[in-house]
Length: 110
Image 1 (cartoon, rainbow, N blue to C red):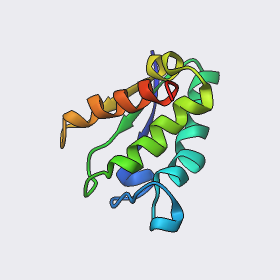
Image 2: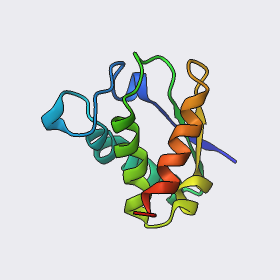
Image 3: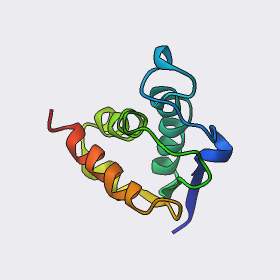
Image 4: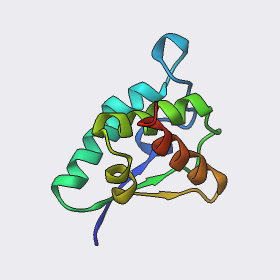
C-alpha cells in the first residue's frame, strides 16, 4: 500500500509548540487544521496510509500531540478509523508512538 508522508520537521516546524496559538508559536491545533487533517482526508480518499515522521524536532509537548492527534480522532468521532490509517516513525523517541495512540484512543472517551 502506498503511503502519504508528513515529516513534521520539514512540513511544519522543528520546534513544535503547545496546544493553542494563544500559548505560543506552532501549536498542535494549527498543525491539525493546516497539515494533518487535509493530508489525512487525502490519504482516506486515495486509500493510502498516512505516515507521520516525528523525527528531527526539538521534542513535543504533550498538549501539542493531544491537540493534533486527539483532535483528529475527535474530528472523525471514531478512534479506530484514525488508528487504522496512520503509521508513525519515531527513531528519536520511540515512546512517542505509544503516547499518541493513547491520545487517539482517549479522545472519544471524554
